[in-house]
Amino acid sequence: MSKGINVHLVGGGPGDPELLTVKAVRLLQEAEVVILDRLISEGILKLIPKGTSCIYAGKAPGRHYVSQDEINEMLVKVALSGRKVVRLKGGDPFVFGRGGEEALFLAEHGIQFEIIPGITAGMGCGSSLGIPLTHRGLAKSVRFVTGHSRNNGELDLNWKSLADPDTTLVIYMGLGTIGEVTSNLIAAGLPGDTPVAAVEKGSTEDERCCITTLSDLEGRVRVEGFKPPTLFIVGKVVTLAKQLNPALEDADGGLRIVG
Ligand code: SAH
Image 1 (cartoon, rainbow, N blue to C red):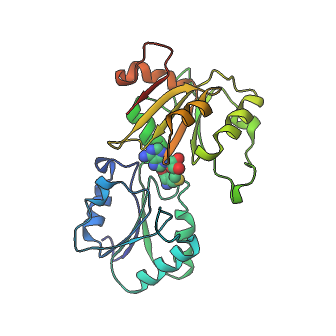
Image 2: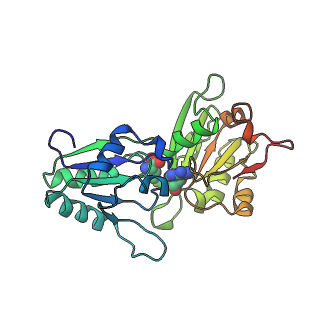
C-alpha cells in the first residue's frame, strides 16, 4: 500500500484482467479486504488471493440489494478496522461509478484514501473494438452520458446539445431506456442512419458487439437479447471498426453480431 494509506478506491477497468493497472494488481494482492461491485469480471476475481476477505456490495440476482448508503457505511467501518482495504469498482471509479460519493463519505469521516484510476468501459470497449472515440474529420469530441434515469422517470438530458454529428456519444447504463434515447436524439436532429455499436461485456471472453444505426438500435438490441453490462457508442467513428477490426466486418450492410 502507498504512503501508509490503507484505503484504496481502485478502478477495475472494463473486464479483461490484463487491462488493470499494475498498481491495481499490486493493491489487490496486498489487500486484506476487497469490497466488490457486481460488475467485476471472473478474470479479475481470480487475481484476488484465496485468503482475502471479499465483500460483495451491489445488486446481483439472488443477493440482498445493498444501497449506496449501506456501502458508504460499510467502507468506513472496514476502513476504521485498520485493515488494508481495496474498494474495487468497474471501469474508472469516478465515471458513473458513484466513486465520488464514496470518496466524499470517507473524507467526511476523516479517513485517508487513494484513488487508482481505471480504464473506463467506453474507452476500453471503443479502443479494443477498433473504434477511436475521436478521429480527425469524424469526431471532434466525445461525451459520456448515462441512460439511467432517477427513479425510472424521464431522462433529464439536453438532447439538442447531444445531437451533434461531430461528437461521439458513449451511453452507459442505457439498455432500459434505449428507445427513449434514440427517439430523442433523432427528434433533436441526429440522423437516423448515424452508426452505433452496442457492446456487451466488452473486453471479456463473453464480449458481443453489434454494429447498427440509431434508427435500428432498439430493435437490434431486443432481438439479440443484449444484457447488462452493455454500452452504446454513437457516431461516425463507428464506421472505422470495419477497417480497424476485420473480425467485425460484414458482407451485408454492417449489421453484425460478434460473440
Ligand atoms: N465506472 C464504470 C461505469 C459504471 S456504470 C466505468 O468507468 O466503466 C455501469 C455501466 O458501464 C454499464 O451499465 C455499462 O453501460 C457500462 N459497462 C461497464 N463495463 C462494461 C463492459 N465490459 N462492456 C460494456 N459496457 C460496460
